[in-house]
Length: 169
Image 1 (cartoon, one colour):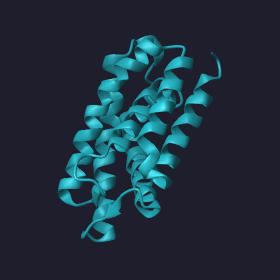
Image 2 (cartoon, one colour):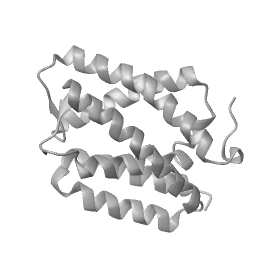
Image 3 (tube, helix red, strand yellow):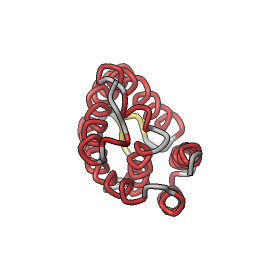
């Protein structure tokens, strides 16, 4: 499907909005979006491989919980956040595919800005809570981690998916 990347982008954005503003209902709704994405996807097998990236997301978010960058209203790692990581991960084959063709320095910059804004938006929307850290410390932790994690995710993607999906410039 030539325009599937737009469907995937819409599903990812809808997932983020549901997670940010309807957190208590987010896990099953995002799971439904993921299932719909797999149903329509022109590459479900490659999408499935990308679910391995969820582990990276859980590790980095667990570190942020531990450091106090942000906190959640649950005792355990939030299921909705795992679902959001799943949707984010499979987006590398579709709406985020452009990123997989870019240099690591650009990915670090995009990660530092985009990842930080995404999490800060989630905190401001109430999906996560700001911790006892200062705002500037939280933003610095997020920016540094995403400057490392986003290029790392693309590197892992390049190992998991055949090279005909991307070509580094």
